[in-house]
Image 1 (tube, helix red, strand yellow):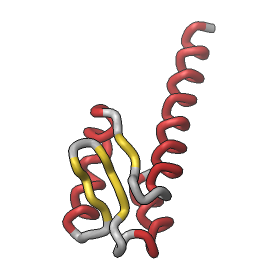
Image 2: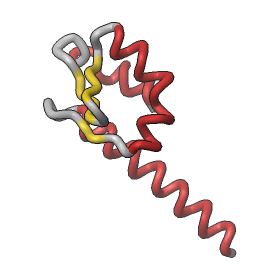
Image 3: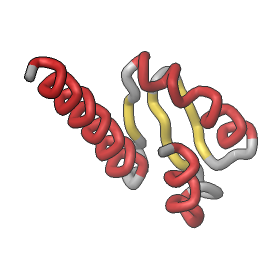
Image 4: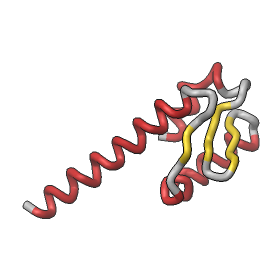
Length: 79
């Protein structure tokens, strides 16, 4: 039972983080990422930042003008 509960809580936490990313990137100000989430996303973020689709200032991730029109495709790559 405890293992099943822990799995559900971990899954729920991951789903919440994904939802925050989805909603946060739709806003001009972007979304502040937790350090662990930022570290996990770094390999996928770096090429998108270099290509000019995203900005990363500290832990705040945001879409650029170039990134907004292709937001859905970027989200697929990040999730």
